[in-house]
Image (cartoon, rainbow, N blue to C red):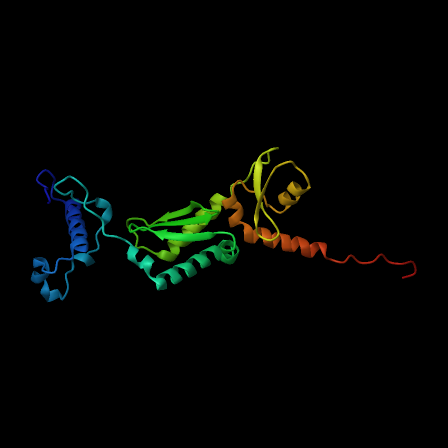
Length: 240
């Protein structure tokens, strides 16, 4: 499998060799390993524990293709009810960090997390039969996979993308959140509704952007309603 006849034997070659062996062992898990038999005095094979830099690369197999990397995440976990429950709690915490109440989203759509074996995390949304990937985060090849960090980063990127402003151009359709959390749309005409939505930062270029801002808009509407309910002091009478 390894042909280093044209390559100088140096540190980089040694690292390539170690990386290749590590990947091979992780992928095949041979029940009868001669290397492990020769190293029984260590009680376990040290190859998977070798701390080498993956940046140097791998030797290529006979077909000239790069050897397969070991997976960073076991995709079968996504079928486990226990893992699904844990993943939901991780997603809820990540949304809360961005000021989003997950319950507001559930009423009007569905947010889901998919994880690839290579550590790629995708946060997607489904509304009215439409599915869209809103945020992604991929684990660096040299880093250990961390679910909470990945989901938090994907959600943060999702919110950043949703914050892209709508251009206030006459006749252009925009989307906004109604007082009950439903998503509405209308052309921008600079009328009373448009000016109210402008004051509340409640104007978005897509239904998905509006959907992700339900919590913040509802909070703004409540604050406005509380302010309008304030009773003004009565004017002082003469002699008071």
